[in-house]
Structures are given as structure tokens and as C-alpha cells.
Length: 127
Image 1 (cartoon, helix red, strand yellow):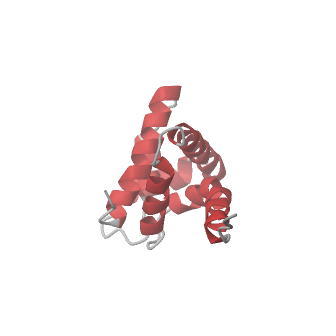
Image 2 (cartoon, one colour):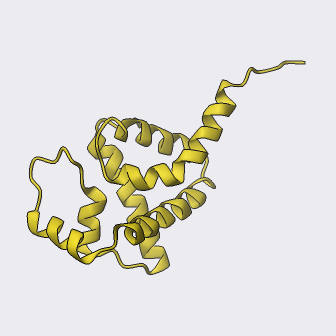
Image 3 (cartoon, one colour):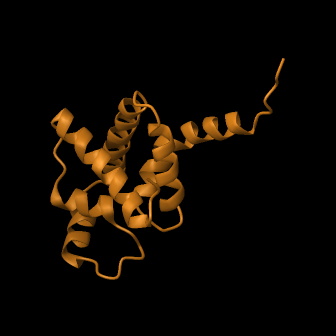
């Protein structure tokens, strides 16, 4: 099923992060969840959560934590047929916006998507 909106695509990735965190016993705080879902285009932003995140969190550590969870979620999902296509579809839809999540996804998917795209662009040689 294709993603009908950036919110659907973001939800796909957030769900992957939360599921992986639960499997590993990693806590995702309300402020981290807020940051994970944050978009510069959001009409309503909880200024208290935003200020709290900026004040209380090291962005590099947070991005490492989320990128790690995403990477391990991708590795697990790759075992399921068709999952790579879902990740590509969700990423293609989400990258149309300005989402903080794209920072972490870029770290995880950059090399993976590049290899997939390079493979798809190679000519098919039939013997």
C-alpha cells in the first residue's frame, strides 16, 4: 500500500523506531518522541517541549540513538520480503518535506539507497 502523505511515511519510520526501542528496552522519552516527529512545517509546535529538548538533550547523542535504532530496524526488516520497497517508498514521500527525522534517515539510508539505486541503473545483460 503506497503512502498517501508525509505524515503516513513519518508514522512508518516512527513506528519502526518505537518497535525497535521496545525490543531492545531503550526508553524513548516524550521529548525525544516530539523531536522524532518534528517538522519545520508543523503549524502547532509545543514550545515547552521544543525548549526542553534543546536545553536537556545533546542533539548528536539523540541522532546517534535514533540512527542506531533505525539501522537495526532496517536490518531486521530486510529479512522480510518486500520491506526494502516500503522503506524506499516511505523515504521518497517523506523527503518532500522538512522533517528532523530525515537527518537520522539520511545517515542510515544514504549508503543503502545509493547501492539500491546504482543497482537499478545498471544495464541488464542477457546471455
